[in-house]
Amino acid sequence: MIPFFVADRPMSLRIIKGLPLQDYPNVRFGIMAHANTSSNFQEALRKYPCENLEYCDAVNGPCQYQENICNCPFRKRILHQTIKMCDSGIFTKEGATLTYKQLFAAYKKMGVEYGIMIDVYKDFQATINSAKEALEVYKPYKDIFKLVAVAQGTCLDEYVNCYAQLRELGFQYIAIGGLLRRHEKAVRYARVNSEELMFDVLRKLRSCYPNDWLFALGCFNPSRLEKLQNLNVWADYKGWIFQYRKRNQILNGYINDFISNNLDELDIQELNQKILKLKKTINERQYLVEKHENLSQKLYQGRRILRESMRLLYEELQAELPEKVAKFNKLTTRGLLGEQEKNLVHQMLHNLGKQESQESKLILDNIQQNRELDKQIKALEKEINTKNQSLAEKIINITSEPVRISKDAILICKQIAKLAGCTENEHRLEQVRSKIAQEVLKPLSKYNS
Image (cartoon, rainbow, N blue to C red; front, side, top):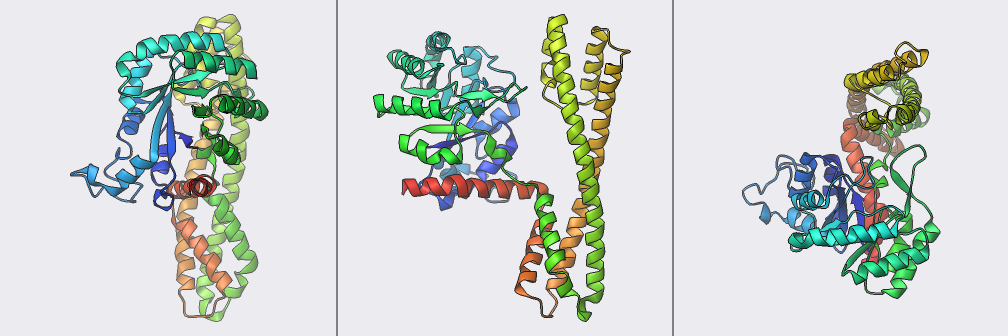
């Protein structure tokens, strides 16, 4: 079983590249990209893991093999343990917009080992027709990437029938699609529609074709690892990138614990002045954190209101001015709009004859308020980061004093200092990597040993 992590931006590649692969030499995993990504990302994926020689996340510094990167042992390990795959972008907001010629050219540009055909959600006959077209266009690319078909259906029999027809067409690599459903009021397919149906389909296909290559599109989750491993089915998922807690959320807990259980212990004569300064910094930071939380909650509510307003406006445009919908499509799931996007909303309201309405005023005011709140929040985050650095320095200063401090106090001080001393980005990278290692790589390594 090989798990795939969906990646569509450079940050995702950075996180994946820094995984502790040396600890799990018998594990392989994949990167699943899509064809609607930017040219910069496509180029980065082609060069991966050596897309940035100035700073490599595998070594936490500049590349030491710039004269001949093929000699780099980290590069060799990553390439040996990583598979690259790409789909048409059908799961993205834009959908599959490229022709097969354009799609396969993108797969070639991205340097992937597997490229997925364009399927039609829940429609196995239309998917079969698309598969036939894909085979014709694929002929010049046979030595460049492996073409992956997709079985679609609405029930077990349809999936089995579609799969059998794809095999008859000559496909060696067949993925199972249509197992995801949309988030409510969104265009993205993000959740397994029926786990029961998913495993019924996979078990049936595995029993009929015990040696076939199988891939469950979008269906991986650490909780399903054992079942997928037993069925020898590959799968991918996107949720991994969001599996982390923000640094300040964790830091707040440590500080509250420190104040409740350890601060009084340090209130000894030798540390009197330093403790007063530390308490002052903690109080100043707490004030900023509370202000940040209040503004963040306001922005959260404001963005929810705006997303709903954009959805309703989109529906109205579909009904009354369908020719304008394409321009407006990208705004429907966003709650924070720039000046150019605000002007577009204003134009659409004008086109609907609502430029002087109360609805128009509320929407435009909401856009402006969200932008102002976002600016204030970012400014506060900079202030909090400055306080974090000051806090880390003061705590390190105190714990280095030759006075008796309990082990518990020293431990939590070190945790606070470490967390306060890193950036939000560094914390995110470390936390996501740790979670992947513990929840995916480690258990998979046991299965493969």
